[in-house]
Amino acid sequence: MCQAPALEWQGDREAIKRTAVNAKAAFPDMHLSVTDQIAEGDRVVSFYSGTGTHRGKWVGVAATGKFINITGIIVSRAADGKVAEEWYYDDIYSLFKEMDALPKSG
Image 1 (cartoon, rainbow, N blue to C red):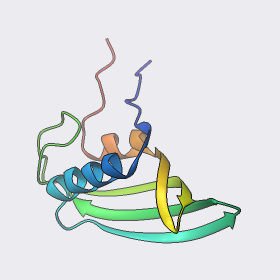
Image 2 (cartoon, rainbow, N blue to C red):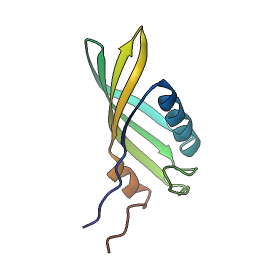
Image 3 (spheres, rainbow, N blue to C red):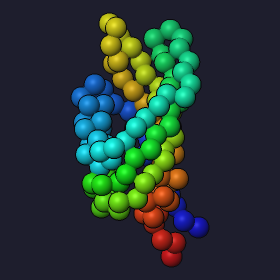
Image 4 (cartoon, one colour):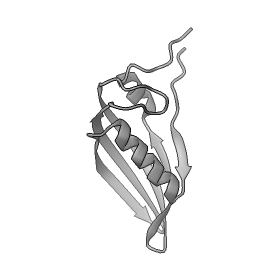
């Protein structure tokens, strides 16, 4: 059975900025849309989808030139009117499959 790569992480404001810069470099035409959002207390849960072209190295995968789709969930915690932390879950299996970058079963 093939084990798909996972991309779940959490981060502070600086980690969030680094992730955005890296993603923009790898997928320069990326377009993300929030498809649903739920807020309660200091938390916001955002469901999103996006498309883009893989034109730069990303999480160890060299540019493939392939057009991709991605969906995911972001849980954000606000403090003092700003995002203080975020936790991400991306459908990385489908993304790696579209990039033809899934580990080969052996």
